[in-house]
Amino acid sequence: MSGGFTAERLGPLGYGAASIGNLYREVSEDDARAAVDAAWDAGIRYFDTAPHYGLGLSERRLGEAMRERPRDEFVVSTKVGRVLDPNPDFSGGDDLAFDFAVPNRTVRRFDPSEAGIRRSIEESLGRLGLDRIDIAFLHDPDAYDLDRGLAEGLPALAKLRDEGVVGAIGIGTNSADAAARAVREGDLDLVMIAGRYTLLEQPALDELLPLCVERGVGVVAAAVFNSGLLAAPTPSPTGRYNYGTVPAELLEHARRLADACGADGVELPVAALQYPLQHPAVRSVVVGSARPADIAENARRVREPLPEGLWSRLRAGGLIR
Image (cartoon, rainbow, N blue to C red; front, side, top):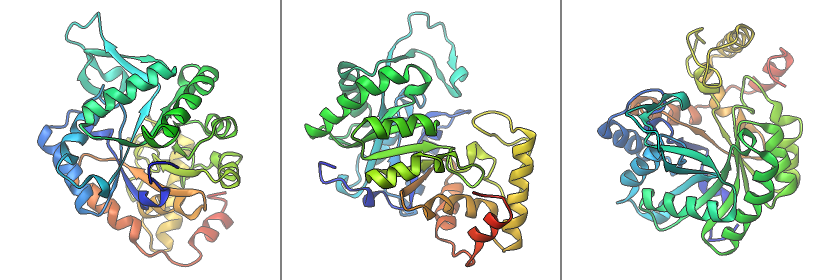
């Protein structure tokens, strides 16, 4: 990795800034700032954002909150592959179709070309108000055109890394298969895998994580609560899974996990946060919230001592792989 960046700088817990981009609900400017301040006060020094999150709102708010902090003391990742264009049909609507409570004055357009990625980085730097971006992830190319995304986006990112424009590059996706293919075909430093290596489900174990170990690619595990299902000690049918409603069979599995962890004196969210960190490829888990109390609690949870043998007992019970 260039630019003096090393994956060890991430720390075990990172802050995911989608929430301060008005994910699901409006968050005030003051509350967004308080959330980032709470992450900093809890010792978090890795912050992840994207143009997709609130059509640039997350990047702007994160940049405002970080502007007075020593630049060498924190790491920022953002994402490329979607550029934001003016919405020619804007008529006072919102972006809730994409889960963000913001006006849809701009629209996303898939553009993994070198020109598109350079434009995306330049615009992200402008919104963040920072002098550099530590990590750039190709964002969800599988949601558009995976072949084109990998063929154009990965070489373009590698070029930017070679030029020192970004410190490290990778892919950010919900698909373990897409991430594994990117590791095979590109020269990546990191993979951000969302929801596919959690206490609830581990498809990333099939190919992605062994490949990352083999290639020396670090892994950032995001959405380790599976969009909220594992975020409470007792999983609720009104919780979210993969940004939607919870399937009955997964709710039942989550409740069995909660019972088994509880029998060991461990709350489900504590186990959910720490489980991915047991794998040698995983460098950090990233969790988001706009509530300062939740952020402080997650920082405590990731450090909580666990009883010896917890993971082996969960495996023996058929609850994790």
